[in-house]
Image 1: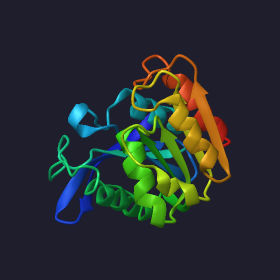
Image 2 (image 1 turned 180 degrees about the vertical axis):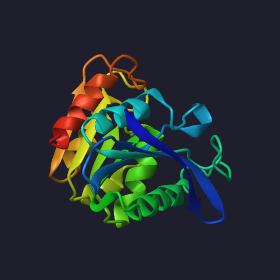
Image 3 (image 1 turned 90 degrees about the horizontal axis):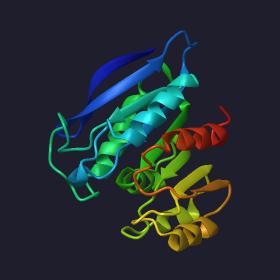
Image 4 (image 1 turned 60 degrees about the horizontal axis):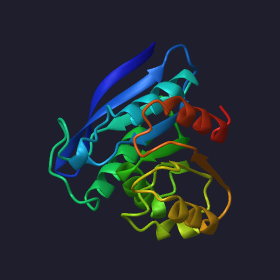
Length: 211
C-alpha cells in the first residue's frame, strides 16, 4: 500500500490539484517521478489508465510519484491554455516536488503521456532538474518535437505501432535524430490508448530506470 496525499500545488495565480504518493517503508529521500496526463479536452486527467498504471508501477519499485491535473481539469484552477500555459503547470509541479523533504531533488524523473509528453518535454527543454525523461505516445503528428534534437539527458520514447497521432515513420524519424543516451521502444499492435498494454509500458520504464 502507498501513502497518498492530495495536494494543492501553487502555480502563479492558480493552484493545481495534485496527488503525491510515497511507497511504504522506504528510506528517505526518494527518487521521484512527475507523471503527466493526456489531453484535457479529450477527457485526460490524473486518473488516466496509463498515468495511473505508471504511478502504481513506480511506487512498487520504491519511487515517489506526483500526478496532477493540468489547469482547468478537475479541481485545478484556470482554463485550458492550448499547451502553452500548461508549461507553467509542469514547472510549478517540478518546483513543488523539488521542495519536498522526502524527495531527492537530484533524482527527479519526468514522464509524460500524449499531450502530457509534448508539454512536459517542452517545458523542461531549458530546465535541468529532471535527471531523465520519458515520453509515452508522443503525438508527433500533431505537435513539433524539434526541441528534443539537442536534449542530452537520458530519454525513453515509447509508442505503439498502431497510434493515430504518432505514426511509426514520424516517431522513428524523431527517435533517429535525437542524441544519445536514448532508449526507443515500439509496442507491436498497441494503439494510442494502450488499454491492456499498461504493464508493458511499466516494464519498459523499469528497464530504462534500472529499477
